[in-house]
Amino acid sequence: MDRRTKLALVALAALAVYPFVPALDLAVQAVTGEALRLDRQLVNIAIFAILALALNLQVGYAGLLQLGIAAFFAIGAYTTGILTVGKYPFQLELWGALALAPVTAGLAGLALGAPTLRLRGDYLAIVTLGFAEVVRVLLINLEGITDGPRGLNPIPEPWLPAALRSVIDTSADASRARFLAMYFLALGSVAALFVGFRTLERSKLGRAFVALREDELASACMGVNPTRTKLIAFALGAAMAGYAGALYACNLTTTAEPNTYDFNYSIMVLCCIIIGGLGSLRGATLGAAVLLGFDNVVSPLLTKLLQRLASGDSNNVLLSFSNWRWLIFGTALVLMMRFRPGGLWPSERVAAELEEGHR
Image 1: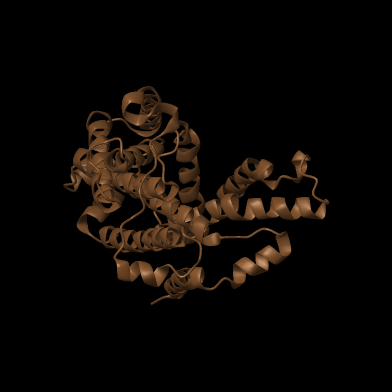
Image 2 (image 1 turned 45 degrees about the vertical axis):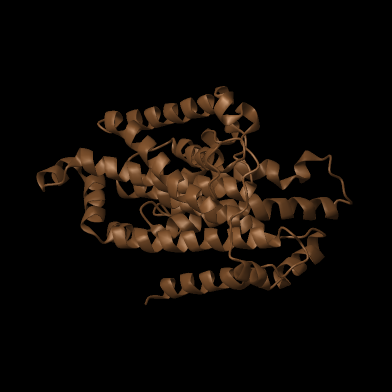
């Protein structure tokens, strides 16, 4: 077991015990005057880590430039809403929705991929971007199904056995059990997908993905079916994005409005895997943690701290650190491309290629 794997296991263990150790929350509250409640933000970060792993399968492994991952994210969220909210006759528990949402999103990926995966590069990117916009507009206009701009709600909380609920519901806060359930469900999903994708990476199919990314013609000459391999990668990535969407909807207790799933989500997830390292499982997870952690945790806390130091002046836009985040994201990407083109945690193959190139 190498040093980086040990570090990842230590980080996972720390995340597992974090909700029961409030020391970090109390320390941040003493400095900024605001409660951190990082466990709630970590659920969102874990969900986007799943989304980053899904996009990494398509872009990092198979080399498919996909700019519409938000569409499959939305399909998973709205499938969960339709299967669980009271206005529909299905009335499934979250666990049923978590099983069916990836299937729906995967079928949508097949429907899109079958006629379009013969396209390459920029052309495929444009088609997937257009598909994402079509899905968003359909969700707005199909009010009889999606409730239009309002979204579907409320999505019921996950069913838990009484014994387990009594163990995790250790707080007077009535919502504590729900958040802990979502926290460990999201964290466990990231760990399970990481192991699953790691196994896939070493399988015959995973090697076919990499061969296809490196040289489609050479891989076809070696017996790889390019169209079928691309379609499998596209459908698997779409299915995992749908699973992330299902978790997202349950965490919010609503599908959120359709405009939530716009182009910014797709670009943010693409930035996660670029910053972490294309084709790297650990890089995609780290990229999601860095980018979403900065956006959802560090940026609000720094804003509160700056306003506190400025005697509570909340009207000065320069004191809102959140207003600077896109400038910081862009600067970080430029610096990454210049000084660490392989990402923060590149895959072993990319790291070896970069090391060979420097010699």
